[in-house]
Length: 428
Image 1 (cartoon, helix red, strand yellow):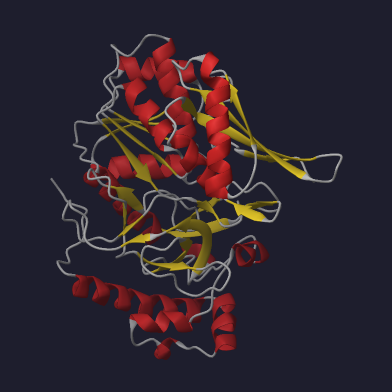
Image 2: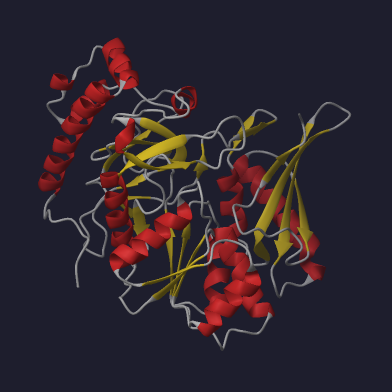
């Protein structure tokens, strides 16, 4: 069976691949993109200045604002006739961030995604049910394209439509389910509610591009009776989902360092973070033709995991996405990330995985924080007050902010097949 893993055997060989790709990208972008040429000239950098990977620091950052200002074809570095497809982000304000793809970009993306399925241990006999969005969004076509390149059977259902998903999962004996974490929980609970657990044959669930708790993950695995679950990153600007995957050792997400360089920086100072320190992901592509990224600030927060994974894979790792630097909210002078609340809730077995954060401003002019979290499926309502008191104490001591915790009934918070909204800021 064909392998989609890279051919290098040492870190030095990987560094050589990265340096060659970095030199090519800088030259390609400088010559093909008026935007990049202007930005590099302003920074006093020309393609000939790149001699080592350390020279990456000489290059200026690119941001989401650059994509919006360059609408409708931002960062374009090839003639428009070489563009065979466009995708766009699921942005909620203003114009969408549109990204162009050449034929080579599409092929590279398919290879990257096929590598994900290989690392997850799929075979050509697997039947892969795709439950993510199609259209301008990168997810659906990305998951499907990777299945087809890998050589397994793609079952492209799309998001929502639980009746169809349940029918297909039973009738076609789906073995792999691909979804957002929210859709995974929605589907898992539906399978349990309909009593279909004995009729399905799901072995693996691949989900991601959405921060999720360990509790949510455990529920998905338990309700679908899956053997394993895998986290997958996804960013429209960086091809889409499929640019890395958590391996079966579950010691972090291996990212495809032969296709892009990953930096972790302090989002305030823009200086590199120490290995293992949480910061903002910055990506530089090494092969992308139509819309290459040079030091693109993703706003996603994670950390690099030092050392070699116990699985033996040479490809480096980053931690799961912990949130976004622009997701942070401030209450009574304290900076809070939703992921921090998620982490604390995941440590309490008497609550479920679904929660909401509500921020309000009282008549006294003060800000108030309320966390609504579901009771565990078999939790005792008589323990609600004690559980809430305990969680409120943890928030005070670990997040350094006071807040009210409300325990609500299991499955009473809304479910969605896309990404769940967690924070409701009513102070504006």
